[in-house]
Amino acid sequence: MDIDTIVVHSGPFHADDVIGVAILKTLFPCADIIRTRDGLTLSVHTRQKNSAVIDVGGVCDITRNNFDHHQREGAGLRESGVPYAAAGLTWQAWGEIYISRLFPRANWATLREIAQRVDREFLEFVDAVDNGALAPNPTKLKTGEGVKGCSISTLIHMQNPANGSASEFDAVFLETVDLVGALLMRLVQSIGAKYLGETRVREAIQNHLAKNDRDPVLVLQQHAESWQSLLCQLDPGGQLLYVVFQAPDGTWMVQQAPIGEASFEGRKPLPEAWAGLRDEALQSVSSVADAVFCHRGRFICGARSLEGALALARSAVLA
Image 1 (cartoon, rainbow, N blue to C red):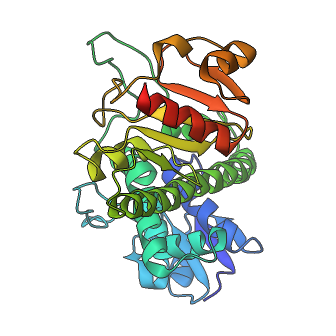
Image 2 (image 1 turned 180 degrees about the vertical axis):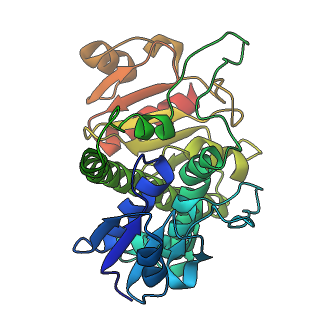
């Protein structure tokens, strides 16, 4: 089903309606946007097959692209207990399709998992704020000290013109939809890439441990930010001591495995003699010709080649 008209309320806007419109404008860039609270117009479009009505209209029926949550009964709750608002409702209907445009090779199970992560990590907060279930900004640090924060919900709300005319609200709304649309796309790409990276890392760790050769050095052909957590979950016995992976600049890194998911302490620090050395100094003491550095904290070092990084890792194992 194509959407050719997106209807949303006029006047001041909030994060949930901006994000809902941004989702659909990404999928249907030629769709017209109508900002109105006119009852007759809303009545027509809530029944129109190729229209989507967002955050207005008094109807919640995602199968018919009616995404309002202001009716007496609301729009339902997530399993987490967070009530739905327009952003989450629109995503519930179109999130997997949205993600399929960014990750066309992903199967439906993967699309569903990424969509759920986007909802948990981003849209739940937006919907909770819009429903009044959560304060829009953090006000205290963990230590109890006061702090003034600014959430995505507040940033979007602050785009509303002060004492603006109807036409000014409409113009700024469209500008904000474009801005948020670009941010949303990058956010979804980031969450999706992280999930796919975790999947590949999980498989690499499991395959490595299945060899039963007790090799303490794992090579990751593709890096993922969360490899430390996955390693601790899959290798609680501590077989793996070092992980080798390529950094964005092409350097091959050797990083010690942590003793726990939330720990900065490692299973086996790199040799003390390497600490803080670079280039020729490290090459001399390590006997690895393309070694480039070792952090003074002895948790990570690197070489220009995979072979060099493996040589550093093997030497560290035996140290």
